[in-house]
Length: 130
Image 1 (cartoon, helix red, strand yellow):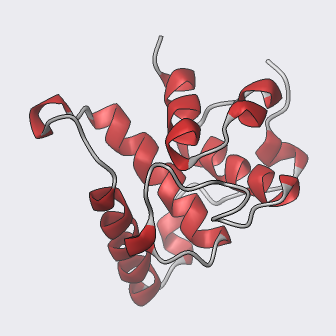
Image 2 (cartoon, helix red, strand yellow; image 1 turned 135 degrees about the horizontal axis):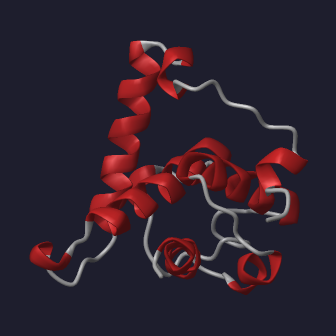
């Protein structure tokens, strides 16, 4: 196993990430992520898997932290580069946050293949699912 992007960027989060947030930060972040997740289409509520929810939550949290796009405007077809205004460094900052949150490593070739929010979620999900 190699070094993760989070490690390359020198990111270190405390064991309890929530300990660094005050209650208002946590509530605002959770609310924005929930709004963004609700705007993404799901096949069927019964088919929504806990792992998919966890991935969507991590991706959306990272995008909310790095992007100026409001949570209620999130849609699967939004372009990471054009709509979220992410340059390669911004995208890798988001990936580092996702890797840290989900304790995974995402290969560079996979990251580069993601052009939209939906594709990014699929790339991250592919690293969790066998």
